[in-house]
Structures are given as structure tokens and as C-alpha cells.
Image 1: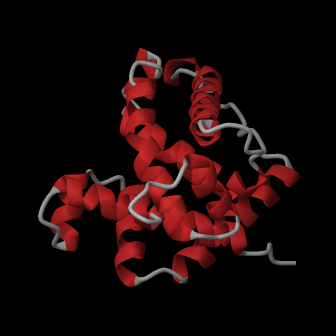
Image 2: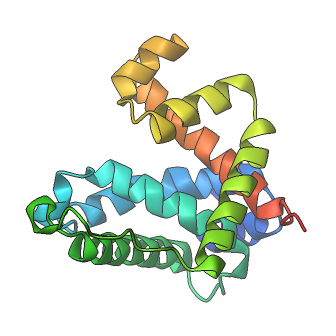
Image 3: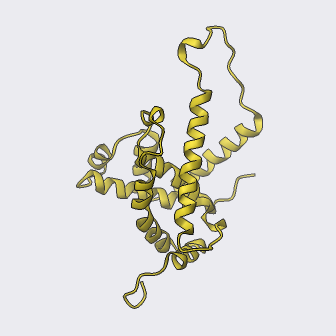
Length: 193
């Protein structure tokens, strides 16, 4: 904030694109509630058993943040539209995965496993390597928050207990901030050669 005025979303986005973490946090605080409201009901009912709207939004943001510096800023709502597109794309990805998942009773016992294409396996391995390297550079609390949520799938009340937070909402904010920092670090890490 400058002189008691709130920065415009365009100003914040431009600052975030050059690495201003506080500007990015302000943008996320401004748009996350709107994005959650917008995303409510967008998740098809058959996918709702897999994750809730908050998880959907959080996962989409984690995927989108490393690319925020490529976003072309044309309007005050550019960041909001960018995040909405990220959520839509995540829903499409989930739908594709769900459609390609065979039913358990349809799988013959002697079916050979599908092999992952080498380029996909390499990309997955690189992404996992960047995730692990970026995770290692976070504070202990950030690492624990992310591991408990992303890798162990704990809900925010459980995370609050583990991290000695006063509430599930406090744990949710801790996880959200940790994921933002993780995404920033992942975006800065060059792939290993």
C-alpha cells in the first residue's frame, strides 16, 4: 500500500512478475475468496468425491503460479481470469484422468501394465526433483505444512494439531502461504542436467 491506498491488481501483478512476494500474497488474498466462490459448483459431481472445491482451487494455483511471469497484463482482472483458466484446465485434466481410469471389475487379471512414455517419465521425474529441491529450501514449518497436506492428505484440522496452530483456518493459511513460497522456489530452480 502506498499513502493508505490499495495498489491496483495490475500494479500488484506487475510487481509479482518481477519477484515481489508481498505483491503476490496480496493478489492471492484478494482473489482466492472470489476464485473459491466462482469454482463452487464447477467441479462435476462424480469428481467431488476425489477432492473439494478448496483443494481444486489450491491445486490449480500451485500449478499456475510458476507461470505467472508469462501472463500478459491487459486489464484489472487479468490475474483473476488467469486463475479461473487454471481451475478450468485442472477440471479438464481431472475429467480426462477419470475417463481413462478403467473400472476395477473391467480389468482382466492378465492385463499387462501400460508403460509410461520415456519423455513423460523424464518430465515427471524433473518436476518431482524440482519439487523436492524447492521443498528442501523452505522453512521446517512450511515443509511440514506442505507434506502433511499434499503428501499425506491431512485435513486442515489435523494439520493444525500437528503444527500447533489454533484452528483449521490458521493451518489453511499456513499451507496456502507455504505452497505459494514452494511454487516461487520451483519457478526459480533450473532443471538439472
